[in-house]
Image 1: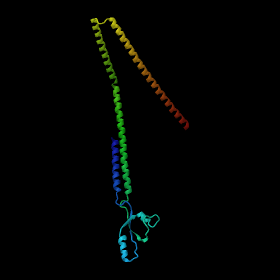
Image 2: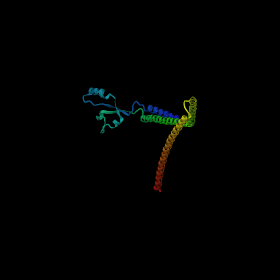
Image 3: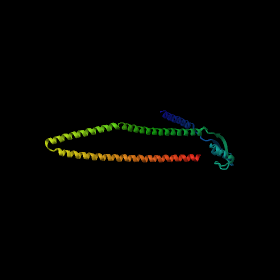
Image 4: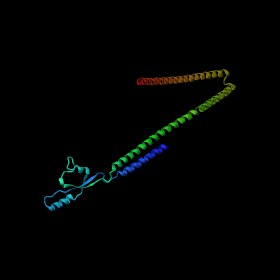
Length: 245
């Protein structure tokens, strides 16, 4: 619970930081500008000069301050016109902290994403652990009641066998009383049933012996693999100790 509250609190802090950063990075003028004017000189008198001033000189023009500083140098983006291009004023950006604000906003957004990812992974792991715990608890309960189920099943089977034997005995007595069979025939049938029972019992014992043998062989193979793995680890450790010495 505390870990979940901490994750949500960190996500909230990152969200506030992102909002502050984005708000701080807002600006109407992101770059330093310089206002210039282009005032070409006329050679045709005053009236011509007035027309040129109205057409060119009185029109405000803005360039990057960095480009204005390179005016007249090689690689300048402003075509060189000599004194016809003149500086008017510098217009610095209205938000010198916009890069810092943008970086803070990006870091806040990434912080939110990180907190949510950590929370998602933790909840997935917790859900898996709860599922495994539920499975383990269900299996433990099943194992706990296994003996009771076996006893109940055995009791039901014994009751069924006793009921079957009782009904068979009554049927035999009625058939003897009515003369439908004789004692010799019944003894032969009982002997055949006993032989069938012994054969079925022998088959069951054979299956059980086979299962036990297979389990023992599997256990022996597992023990041999574990022993080989342990010997390999001991050998690696001894070699490591020898190298260190």
